[in-house]
Image (cartoon, rainbow, N blue to C red; front, side, top):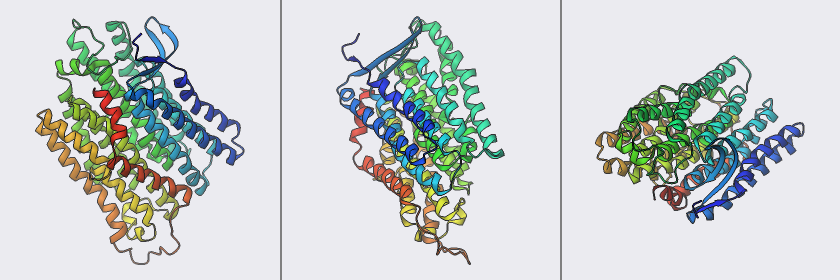
Length: 493
């Protein structure tokens, strides 16, 4: 075994924390204060547990734990390396913020089935942490499916026709693509290589030199579409349809678990299954970058047409996810770094935006942007946070998204891809076109005649504080990005 690989049980402990939390929530569901205390404490313990792994990973060590062997060289095993920590830290920290926000939202609207909601929320994080710490493609596939199943009750939470339709589309898209594309690809990779373990660095892929090149290209395409949580068109329709769910669920889908699971799995396989050298030799990178560029631009244009705030944010997510894949596909160090750091930057900014949308609905019962003229005067904190998070999505300094956009632009120049450079600049203008009018309407437009905002005020503190925390972190990691960039730079060597 490599001397930098350290066996540890801390990975199992981190994995079990949200699972135990979900069980505790179900057992104590009748006592709402105790139920929410279990969720809160579980999220904090998970964050601390993941945080305790940071020093070892920053030293260049890989934490490892083998659980079961299913077939020869097919195991359920966990590992924490630099790329794992990027996603694990995002998922655990955002779960902590989301739990506290959910208390105010669900109680504020007196939502039903809050025990089921909290339990499924915790189970979704269980799946996300499992994906983050997967040592191989088989383990990742299992936890990927767990996320799909555990989030279905959240999407269909309202249990009406709209909820069931959105949930059905969500489940069919994600499970069908995994079965039709990902599962056959995984079997073929095992037959060709004799293993499903990820490589230890991004240069070396898993495939032998004499492998059939056409077959490898086909497997790559299958993996790209098999992880449909990544939101690449045309397998993106599940994501806007899932917006029927409560806002905390939307935040979970878009910032914490589901879509981040999709892009993490996609980029993990690109870098640690196929590898930079194989992708470069087979010319897989740049065509992928141009392919996802269509999603970036098309989703942004669709977002412009949406008056419903959550719908606009949903199509923004479809667009922004492809930034991550595009950056990695450039196969340049700045491009890969820009893509991976956007997992972090998008997570904190997007959860802020969805939290703000939820706060607006709870406080003012407004869903459409056209109904928000002048609302910023009575909800300045909410719309101020929305404006700051919007700047991150646009890529403006000093918010976190600027770091992503800068690296992506440098990466496209180093790859000599002026077409990709144009896509990034055009998408930035489109981002500004669909985000800035929301803040402008709220602060500078006059309320419609007869609109009475006298009784409207900010959402409860249990919702407002998480908004401010998420927004503040987005600014902090924009001004001081070095902590998370340590992990990103460790991935690229």
